[in-house]
Length: 163
Image 1 (cartoon, rainbow, N blue to C red):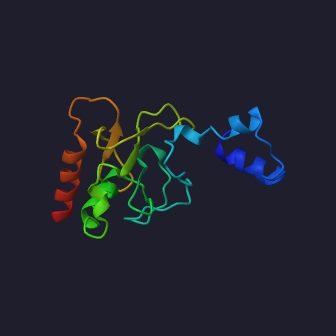
Image 2: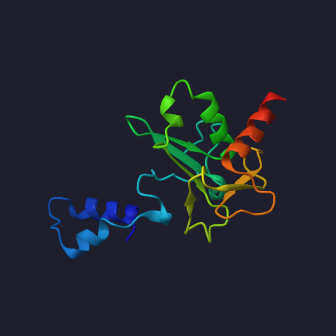
Image 3: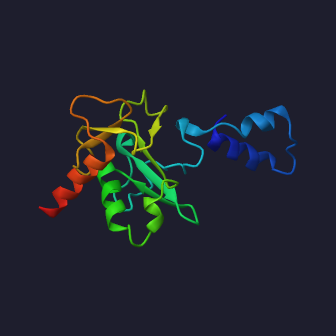
């Protein structure tokens, strides 16, 4: 049973009536779509990108970051949008540059929409793929010919904005 099913179960039977049984312990440990522990679920086709305001639909390019004293969450529909946000909001949110700020991008090569893998973009590689906002980068776990690291991908995106 994954997180959304666990919520339904707890709502139906009430938290107070649920004793700490092996079933309760098992229910507390699952996470939908292989999502990292601190990552907030993206509500596909409902949540919007904080940069372009597009609905986040194409799971292959989604991203999220979380950090600061309030563990603020920002969601993205394209790795290029994440690159722009990091540049544009650096003054407002100085914690974006902290190594402790959590960032995730979808692994373009995830097996299926139901089995998403998430990568730290600072350790991912970016390959050219047609993306929702036309920045045309997708994250992958292993280096491929012509792949860029996060810093180089960001520079390419920001250079395109200056033109």
